[in-house]
Amino acid sequence: MNRIAFITGATSGFGRACAHRFAEAGWSLVLSGRREERLAELREALEDKVPVHTAVLDVRDDAAVKAVVEALPDAFAGVTCLVNNAGLALAPQPAQQVDLADWHTMIDTNVRGLANVTHALLPTLIEQGAGTSIINVGSVAGDTPYPGSHVYGATKAFVKQFSYNLRCDLLGTGVRVTDVAPGLAETEFTLVRTGGNQDAHDALYQGTTPLSAEDIAEQIFYVATLPVHININRMDVMPVRQAWAPFAIDRD
Ligand code: NDP
Ligand code: 8X3
Image (cartoon, rainbow, N blue to C red; front, top):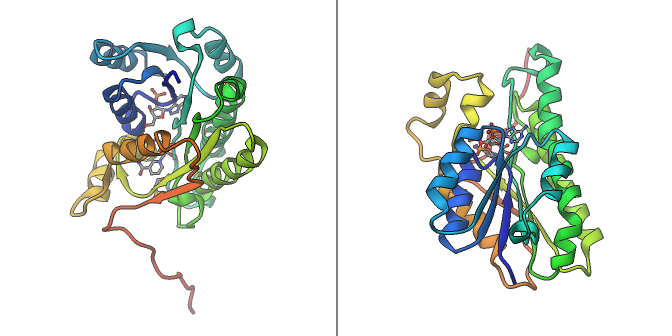
């Protein structure tokens, strides 16, 4: 079987680490994201090792997603693993204080964007058959509520349920679906979430041991390379130094 991974959000964090991890194992790569210069850097870093195709892509744009998939060069057209990683959190303040536009951006990216890419690649993945994988990057926020998670956590709950529901429809096709749900991981995620607040980024990861982008890329690679008869439905991964908090109670 060809081994071709289509990775969204490859310009940073988990996506970029996945590009390196899959390249290390000799996979051909389709790398996408909005930042063209970062895609060019990645291509330059990896194309000596493996075939690399890059595409500037905003996953929110369903026509652009379809066009990128339809225009894949022959050597990259038979995608065998989709890593639906592009996503973001915004507006960590309480729900009642945030802009509606930020909610829309999270829904458009994490829900609509993930659906756009999945829909565009499903026929290809089904054609490739047994051993192909859709790996959706969810979050522990998809099933653990916490203050300031509002729409973000809800989009990740969508990722979980969509992954499970896809499994039902794809039964018999050989296509696997996994929701990889990380906890605290140090990437550009918090900078994006806080509108570029470096102090907030530093404070969140200070004095603890978060997951790294490479830790999650290793798990995603593991899921993608399991024997073809195995499907991990959901992988919930936290740092040892993170756990759940007690219920909060409002008192007089
Ligand atoms: P980063 O901010 O480092 O990376 C996010 C990636 O998503 C970037 O490559 C960015 O690329 C891409 N992206 C964002 N919006 C779009 C868009 N509209 N179209 C295409 N690409 C887009 O964060 P992470 O690596 O941490 O995040 C990756 C995924 O992991 C996200 O889905 C996030 O929700 C999830 N996650 C993160 C956790 C964490 O603690 N870090 C924990 C659990 C889940 P570009 O800006 O170039 O488009
Ligand atoms: C990101 C992890 O804990 O900030 O999805 O929600 S968390």
